[in-house]
Length: 171
Image 1 (tube, one colour):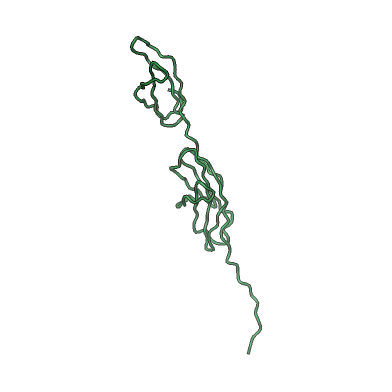
Image 2 (image 1 turned 30 degrees about the vertical axis):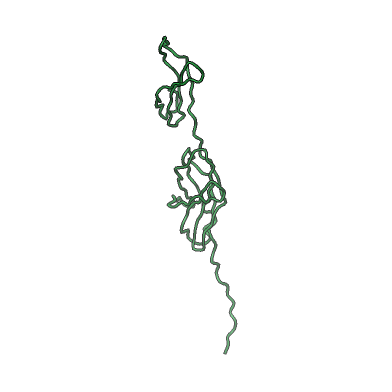
């Protein structure tokens, strides 16, 4: 004997997480902190978070692992980057349904500042010697210096190289 038909609806399997790339922070000449946020978990627990990054909008130069997590926000400190370079990154999160990814965000590492140099008038000038004078501000970057001198504007001779350090004021 047959029974009556039963009507039922299966529950939704959920969806992949929705993820947002937040502005990069702590940007220096050689590093930046990538930031992301999970805006919805898709109905399942978040299993993994990471970033893809690169020098093109495809963000295909690398993947991060071991991100720092603070609630729905997550971050990763990307290091050993060249100064003055444009980078793109995407935030990613995974639940039991799959991966969700943000649109690409971008940042530029800080350009390395050139030292500021000013020469001064030579002092203690004699027939065979002179003291060469000047100031250098390393502008926070490891810097060295030397003087060039000679009897023409082609100079031809230089002093030994000195170390100016990496301070941020003139020496």
